Length: 525
Image 1 (tube, rainbow, N blue to C red):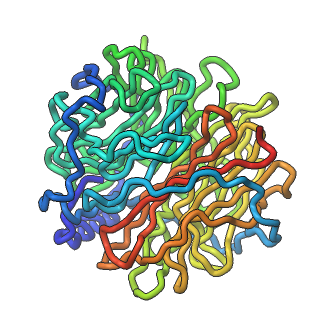
Image 2 (tube, rainbow, N blue to C red):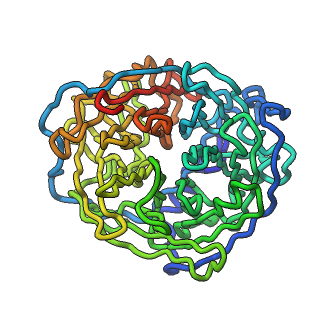
Image 3 (tube, rainbow, N blue to C red):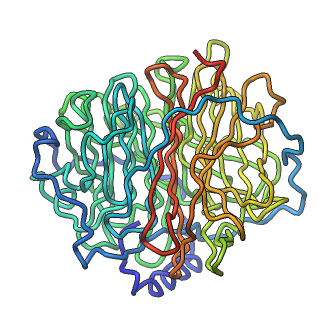
């Protein structure tokens, strides 16, 4: 999570190995726990702040590899062949390509970029480690930045304002409110502690003022936070590490109503020691099925390779003791094996350096949508492929608030190219698309996407299209890639998909770029 200089990478790897060997806490679920804000205020417009420029000229921040905590126990692999590998080939994905342009580059000397973007009424905001930039969604032209994400908290005080270590940014557009949610972890020691820094824009303009908050969640390392927007809260998940061991997965709900108004806000959290890397559901479209519906958290089942675990989080900010985090409900899926055993094996041309699959967890986002006759969640992860070392497994889960069922699932492969680090979403008519990285011994890590329309055979994706053909492989002993990408839906038409992912323009390390691309299915109007 937090930045460690690359010349200390072997110490980081040794720490990670120790975490793997650590004993899992015997604690089961604990909570609800109320986390009080450290401080809140409202900023001047960020376009008027003395924003911090990217840190490329700061040698203390050059070439740093972000810490990533791993699941500390193995999952028994499946001995069965993958039964949902897509074996039929459909025609090229039936979309119209729109914008396609470069985003933020590695101006800070951080890796991996944690590429994440979201789209609002008129703008697209991209966050990476540790910068952000605002683009006009109609043209792709920059309207602000790049600037340090930490500069949003300029004058705020504490770790959010002064860092100097930042990591794991997330940006989401709150479609119902027309506001931006930008989060990042700030730390003064870069290793042991952290503050969750949460900013909610005061308008739909991402260059305007923000209601700013800092939350010291625990005296431990809250790694890999992921967020989801829901009507009653901003929900988040963390993997919490102590100095020498994994402690628990934490699920938190932040008081959305008060944050939208700029008032005092608390969080309500639960801790589960036998789980790892939850994803909270993030709302697409106009609303949910029923008032008070819980937010859904899903993880790969930490005990086997043939199911997912679903939890329901119902928060009560007025009386936190009435909040509940219930589950798991086990959702049986087709057996799979984690790509690269959950670790590193993605090939690249011209180098023996392989890349991290990050296949031990589901990939951001867990996208939720309510249709008139059903509710659906879509999500992906990386699994062992039949044509290459990694393929993308994807799911559409229906009826999550009743009896969850896998409506369709598939494992998508393309030629001998390893596909991984995907992100998925669904538009208003039920079209599904995911973007992904793809690499092989002859193809530099490039960016593409695929999708399907409701009339396609269940479990099948159409043949992919290319977003960016890369010209470089990542070298220099740096195997981290991602650690996530993002597929989002334009709220203006509820049809246009926006994908953000990294690529390497030429062989090297700490020289990544990002690409943003938009497209829509021809049947969505």
